[in-house]
Length: 178
Image (tube, rainbow, N blue to C red; front, side):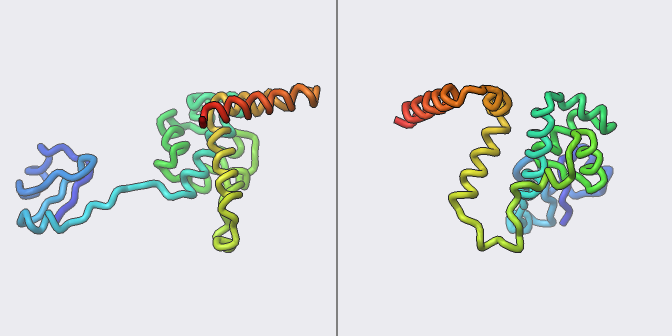
């Protein structure tokens, strides 16, 4: 049995692959001697690891915080902006050396990209509510509006105005939930 990912079917004869086969999710072709054998084959979907998604999200958050485009970061790293996109989505893993370069380009430490990631040694000790709050803060900061708001809010010197702004957001959020 041969599995070919994302190949053109016209390559089949050149590669010496039999014509019998089935098309599964996302263009993965499973070739087998019989249709029954192809049916038994399980195609595993390639999903990014949680740590890759987390590191990518932190790269995106830091890049946006600094006001850089994917193209600008890509040029600083000698990559294409598509590669930066893949890193930020967690679709591609960032090597240790590339993470070091990214940290340098974004003027931060390598450990910044792992901040907020659950420590595997303390896996059972985490509070679910704290994780949910942390996740919502992270998701908020990944939006353009959230990042801009987080940057502008501390510039408001008057504590009364900051409290009024917070109250306004609470009222709007409650109306949205109703």
